Length: 551
Image (cartoon, rainbow, N blue to C red; front, side, top):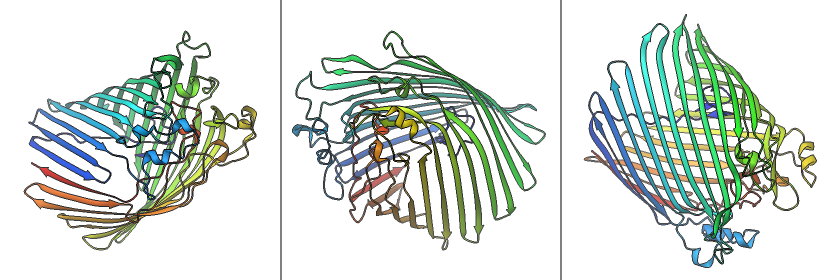
């Protein structure tokens, strides 16, 4: 994970990037089977098999997962919590109040081919099939949620003085997502049952070359991508009656360069990226859908000074951008705003990292200036919404401290906080039908801390974890509600049983606290814009145990 605007290889990386890297399969033949049982009728069965020789290695896996509805600390199920929704139609029908929370299947495979001594071809696939997923926070549930992700990467190493690694990476992902009110009290007939099918795809190619030039590691790349979003809404009699997102394509061409070099005790790195983005909507489906073009420059510089063998100090400056997506531009009913500008983040990060004996400390702070931040707001006293550009700032930081008590026991701790502020509410006042005075930025996490005592002697593992958060600041003008602070205790124990078997058991929220972590900001909705999200409590005390066998 790269925090801050310091990764120029990613399109739209506004404040950080997460690069998920799966392990390569190994040679020989090995595998794992695991079964998990938990509270609220949670069941999961998973298996993975991998193997190969020097030339080719492969891995395949499958999991099946189901769960009933969890209960919060007050003993209320998910649908019982939805009974408190302000809109009667958001509540569940009597015949669906006891429905399972979801059913889910995953499929994955990875094939690695070693071509000669300096070439590598990697093929990946991941599939996700989820059915009848309850979304009590929103007026619709996910009846179908299917995802397919394909990726191929070809690498050539040590081509000469001007190429240590040359790679070509191609990917294609598609999502079929159908939301519906079938389980709600409002679905009294096929004509009264609303459905919203959405299809989304993204495909792209990245070409990159890395070389060392006069002790400077230099990477040059080109990044091409196309994203399509197409959504409709209607009754069960005609799900395609209304165009919600008008078959919009987002095409991007990105050119980037990054360099890194060490000068004695100083590590210096920097990056530059240029993006040319065009967003084209189907004009025949929506007269208000206007095509947009954006050109953006991202840049960063990051320096790290090693003041001793035990510590270093770093400081970084960066600028990145994010163009509006098709939902924010074109969503039907006056919700989308075709005049949106891209958001530009200018950020400074600094921190220190130090090891003192068995104690490791790390502290970071940042200041983020957001120009034309894309913000969802209420257009009146009801729940109608739209999007606007505002200027805002976010200030935050975190501290982690890990201490090794001995070879088996350790103490882990961390604390993080952020404060988001609208610089000026006049922009929202100009477009909203009611005056906006709350300068708190929505969807900002509260002050949160974690302390954990960990025991690990290779055969046995135990952890006692305390997580606590302060009450959250909230944007009352745009749907957020007050959420109180909380503290929960999680316990976990694992042991190797021998002969390839292992057992893990735990309890989360040991004291059965009633608490919530996700607020009711109107910008969190995706398909039913204008609906007020429900503040949904997290699970109460729940137990789980996993039995695994490796061969």
